[in-house]
Image 1 (tube, rainbow, N blue to C red):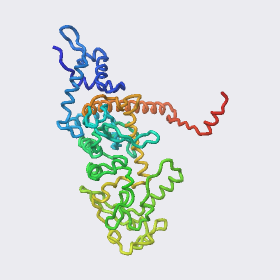
Image 2 (tube, helix red, strand yellow):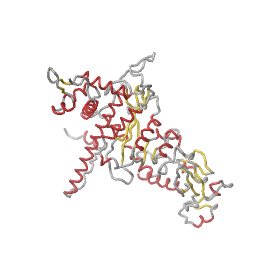
Image 3 (cartoon, helix red, strand yellow):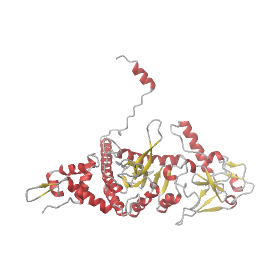
Image 4 (cartoon, rainbow, N blue to C red):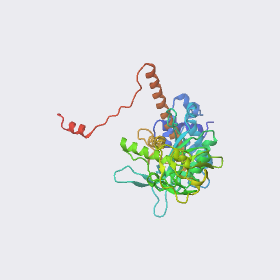
Length: 470
């Protein structure tokens, strides 16, 4: 008797083969991928099974039936806009299996971001009827000229991409974990359990890089849980979170740090370096952030298990001169000097040390002083998350834009997205290994390292080309 349905492992292999070939996420493509395997593989996977009337070739209905059974098992009993615990566990196992053993500990830094996944279903009608009731309205950034945002009907896909450590060697930018939520669910707190499961599985969480969409949230939804896992946050602060945000013991809480109450307001209002800044502007900005660091209260202890640590006055830490701290006046004049100390010195000026509770700068505190050069260099690694999103939407491979998957519901789409993530990781790892092998070959033969050739055409070049003879 031949089996009445396709084995789950064979279905998963068919999904991986179809996504590795850059095919859309259609069950018909999965069936074609399985039927197109070599004869020995088809027999091993049960694609061709013996029957009384001769060999029986897998049918589309068998693929559809097995996929439906898998979805029924993994789906939540009461959909709440997030994957079920069982589906999350399966996703973690599938994605982690695509990471080669030599890369599992190559880096501890992760860049996180979310992207849109549009549903194949049409938006709800006036009566609310739709073929995909789990999806909801969301907004995404549009790159079209004259358009800033646009609405779409679907889901948010969140991913954590491995990037190199600050002082570490280059690593392949592999996706370590994914999840998907309906657009009516905040994707930021929904991704915290994903990182927690990754940490509990033995993966060390180092730097977590995120944009201002993750920083502009309640501290208990993002920053505090990550610190509890031992992660170091490197994030771009939201404009509403920049600058002074209150005081603690008289010290000014700004940009994730505590500053002397006599700090010049211009230094507290520094923002990140704009794009296209010249060398002169960059040098001036770096000088300002370095000066602001002199006014920052110096840490004299690391945070304990409860998140408490102690800091001291910058004059006591020998970073500036202040008349309230007579010993600091013996410092050199190359350090800033407080010319207008507070008439009624607050606690931070009278005590030698100050205890900082975890509630102070809970949302904005991070690894490097914001927006210093060290922060800028570290935050530049977050572009790895953008590259992950772009490769997932690359028309030359797996384009997950609308029409890529015509299944409805969070669970079936997310199962296919896991297969797409695995195929994407394979391509990235193969390309990284090929570049490493080429670099080793050139080094062994005495050739210089291969560099990217950047071609830049100016307006003068184009004008000259326009007047060139035919």
